Length: 63
Image (cartoon, rainbow, N blue to C red; front, side):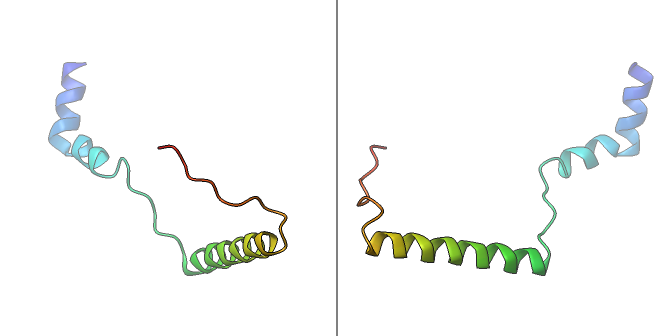
């Protein structure tokens, strides 16, 4: 076990894995546009429902 661990450490694989552990791939241009359009659509729908009185007024959060 020690030999394997030492080889991994010397090859730089452990360091590389630690560097990219939480890295997320950037979204493509189409996915970015799609998510922006979706959020605009949802925001517009919520605004409309609030105007016609279907949604309750926003209450303050306790935290």
